[in-house]
Length: 397
Image 1 (cartoon, rainbow, N blue to C red):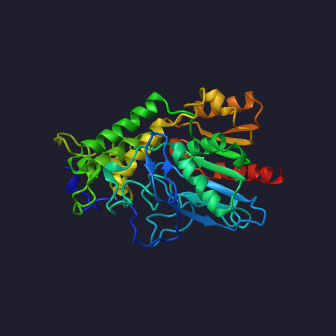
Image 2: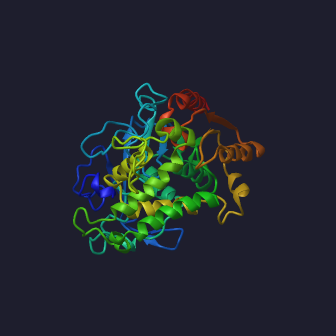
Image 3: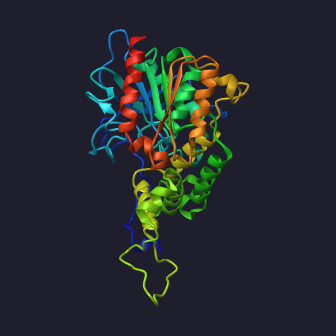
C-alpha cells in the first residue's frame, strides 16, 4: 500500500491560512461594497486577493506587467523558498534584476487566482457569514471570473493598462481573457502552452482528477477542514495529481528517465516472484509528486480550478472563438512546445493563425524540448531572449 512508504500524517489541507506567515504576499479585499457576480450565477463578497510585486510602478504607470500562474501555481513567481512560501518562485530565472523580465525596469505583479488556496479567496477561506471554511459552499468559477478579480487589483494598484500580460497553461487562458475582456487595458500579451478553448480530451483528464477527489471518503463532500491531520482527502488529491503529472511530461522523458526499472532496490531476476504492489520507478516518481502536492495545496481548490479550466472557452457568449479573438488587437507572442501532449502545439498555432489572419501583429515560437507541457517552467533559456526582445519592442511603442 502507498501508506507503507510515505510520511504521515498529511495536513488536512495544504492551503495557506489566515494567521500563517505571509511571506512576500500582500492582500487586497474587494467586493466589500458590492458582491462579485460570477459567470455561473453565484456571488462572492469580501473577496481577498493575495499578490506579490517586484520593482516599482513608474510615474505614468506604463511599465506594469501581469504574470498569470498555472493550475497549482501561486503569486510567488520569483523569490526563494522560505517562511510563508513552500517553494521557490515558479519563474525564477525569468523574473528578477537584469533578467528578461527585468524588475529594475518593469513593475511586475502576480496574484493568486480566485478559487486558489495560497491567500486568495477559495474553498478553504473563511466564509464572511460565519467564519467557517467555504468548503462545499464555494461556487463554480471561470477563468473570466479570475480575470475580473485581477482587474479590481489593477485598479487598486493604479495600473490602467498593462504593458504586457504573460502566462503559461491556465495562465495563458487568463492572458487571452484579459485581451478579450479588457482590450483597452493591455498593450501586449504572451500566451504560452495554452488554448482558446478546452478540448474534449483536456476536459477528460480534468474529469478523472475530480472523480478521484470526489470518491475519496475523507473528502466529505468538500467539508473536511475540521478533520484531524491525516484524515483529509489525501489519496484523492494525490491520485488526481498523479494523473495530471503524466500529461505534464512526454513519453520520451518517462522512458529515458525510468524505463522499466523497479523501485525500492528491487531488481529483475530469474525465478523472481511478483508482488501486486511492487513499484516501478515511474510509480515512485508519481507517488512523490502526488504526496508533495498534498502538502502545499487544497483538494477543493484543485477541483474548482480544474473545472474553471475545463469551462474555458473565449468564444462562450461571444459568438464563437473567431469573433472573440477579433477583440485582440495588440502585439502577441505565442509559445508552443513540440512535445506537449496536454496542450498540443497546434492549439497555439491556431491562436497565432487567427490573430495573423485578422491583421493583429502576432508571432509564434516553438520550444524545442522533450519535457512536454512543463517545458515552459524548465527550458527557460528558450523563452528568455525572445521574451526580452518582445518586451523591448513593446516598450518602444
